[in-house]
Image (cartoon, rainbow, N blue to C red; front, top):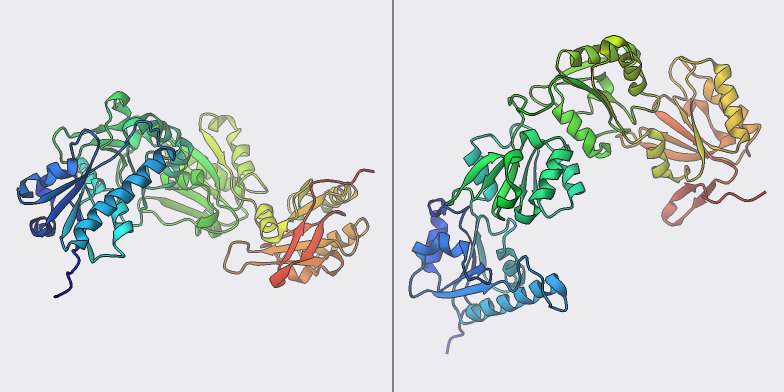
Length: 501
């Protein structure tokens, strides 16, 4: 007597709703299947079944997988998650019984089975035990873009797909940072989703698509949608920005956003900064910092030398006065020895009084180097630039003495360059009058970049020849600790508690 073969499991993507958008392969699998399974709420109506209805025969065995709970509360001891886990286990057992009997099972799924689909819960529980095939389907994202008739993403733009169930602050950050987006699972989440679009400054661009390709389809501007009318099967869309005029309702006129890119590349950007860079018509900055920003079609880049800060600020403000959205790009944090001061100084003149200026923070070189070393800035610290290009060395020396006398950790910016080679040695000698020769000094060079080198030396061993303009120095206080750990790791930290007396 031959051994009975197990059945085959199919996850069948049905597309966004219109039966005409089902793939040929989906129709073939439904025709071949012995069992047709589909999810539904307790009212028994299944959108998936309604899409495939004309392909379901009377001789098909139907397995409705009815959710025990959707949006309502539950008295299950494990709460909503516990109720759903129990349901998925029970549903998988029912399908496994058919598969063990040699029957082919097709689980119907709206859209694509593995894209926010309920089928995936069956797949995770059964695919390692039975022969399985997934039939992809047209997603609601693609259907919404088609119905809007607007490119979703183009070129190097990034598309972010978000569930509307995320916290509003998280949605805001992600919407601010991306080029294009689709937010799914609306319904009850719509007020928070709309609030996130508004808080991120993207509401004027946002579109709304409800029941794409289905009966009752609705398309419009997100800002005009009545929150009480939004069903679960609706999406909010931020389409491509490329070649699109500024949307009606967006702020009129230009502005200047001074942005900090952090110490290196994209990993150090904040979501707010990403959004400002993406939205800008013009980028203005030192060429080295502009090179960290991805090239976007339609944006104009204005690179310049590092020593023309006032001219660069005036140029940016003139562009904004002509209605351009300008991002002035700065390394690190724009307010720490960087471009924010230059822009605000020029912006304070009467002729630029009506030009909006925003300063967006970035990760500073001191914070980046400190994180790599451990926590040397864990207590009070002072930040001093060793550059005497804009202030006399006597002022720098006086401030170093004051900070050293106060036993502050020091973050020393701009320590040296090709034209400034003696300042580090002078600063070291001055600090040795107040600090132990064993005081740890963190040298952070090109932190976050391809040539990153972070190491710690004794203050007495600090060699000016090993310090350049791309290096920041973190000089410990009397309390700063320098410890070797396992695997050769060295850490530097300053305790938060300072000894009494």
